[in-house]
Length: 124
Image (cartoon, rainbow, N blue to C red; front, side):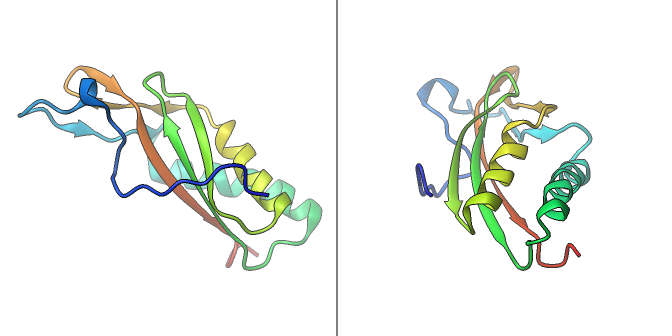
């Protein structure tokens, strides 16, 4: 079940008020201690549900989400669906993730859209 889909071709979504002034550098959002901790969070959280159902083989889901200026996750969009229960598991674990540091331009925190593919191809 796809609730909302969207295509975008940029790295971040900004309005005129958050456009980077010349000389300021965009700092990407990051999860706690980086990519490895984010991957561990996703894999460990999904494993609990996957083992209980014992159904995950070669599934892949892609989700787009916005890291708000506060670091909260908002506006999740299902880009690539696998099947309903796996889609819901991925949406649930990403929306419940705490610990994101928002993107910034200079001293200003800005919203930034990311996309995450979750694949269980080699998980078991």
